[in-house]
Structure formats: structure tokens, C-alpha cells
Length: 215
Image (cartoon, rainbow, N blue to C red; front, side, top):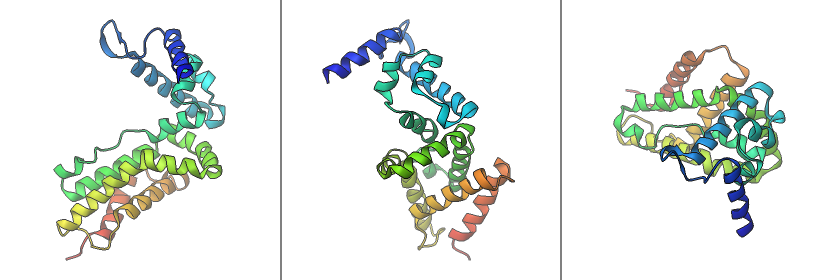
């Protein structure tokens, strides 16, 4: 523990100060600014060169942070790219309580399409997939850290739809998420004929017809 704290302190000093301090006493914590710089540079490198050419050292150099800072916060290239492509903002789990079921479902579809069509996501996914193939433990880690909250949102929305008499009783919200993820990947990686708005409407209309109760 002591050696890790010492390394972190050295990284903070090299990057210009304490990780929790504020610039001039105002604004965001300096550590948040550094993280944003690292994420931004990683996105740029992924889009320009792909997963294989991203290194922690090069990201540190371009982001203006120290190498110890990179290793203390991420440790591996996988962990850094994982955060960049899977850590994108997603609707709050309670957002759907304020919307009609069909509108809330469309928001979830829209979020998934935008995340999986992001250039950094598309550039980083093949490299991560190769690592995940060799490391099943990392699959479980990503599921718990990034996918589980989204899965819960789908389950909650489907349960609400059932309670309102809109969704068929046999629809599984967790399985529905996996169906949506697979369908979006198909259209963003293989069959790319539809633009973003057309893909969102295509998926929304097809899936809704399959899960709602017919009069």
C-alpha cells in the first residue's frame, strides 16, 4: 500500500499537483481534467491507428500526464480502452418512469446505436474482443462493470410494460438486451446500409412488434 501511494504521489507531482486539488480553487478537480484528457487522447489514437497501436506511454505523452499516473489509474491498455468504449453515458435507470413505454424503449435503442456506432468503439472493439477470447474472466468483469446496469434498465422497463398490460408476459428483459446488442452490432459492423436514424427506427419498429400485446 505504501509503495502504491508513493507512486501515485509522484504521478500527481509530475502532472502538476495533488489529484484532488482545484485549478485556482475553482472548476473541476485536476484529476478529473487529467482523466478527460487521457480519454480524449485514447479516442483519437483508436480512431487514427486502431487498438494495436495504442500504448499507455504514447497516451501519457499526448495527454500531458505521467506514465505512473497511467499505470496507477488503468494499469493496462485493455483497461483503458475498455473504459473508453464501454464507459459511454447511458440513460439513467429511472429515466423510463417519466416516459411512455414506446418512447422509453426508443431511447434505449437510440443509446445502443450511438454507443456501438461511435468510431472509437468500432476501432477498439476488435482488439478487446481478441483479449476477451483469451480471458473469460475479463468478460465477466465487463458484464458486471458496464453491462449489468444497462441490463437492469431493460429488465425494469419490460417489467413496467408487463404491469401496464403493454408487453407480453413471456418477454425476458435481459434476453432482449442481448438481442438488441447483437442486432445493432450486425448493422454497425457488417450490414452498414442504414444510417443512424433509419437503423434506430428499423430496430424500434421490428422489436416493438415482437414484444407488445396485440389487440
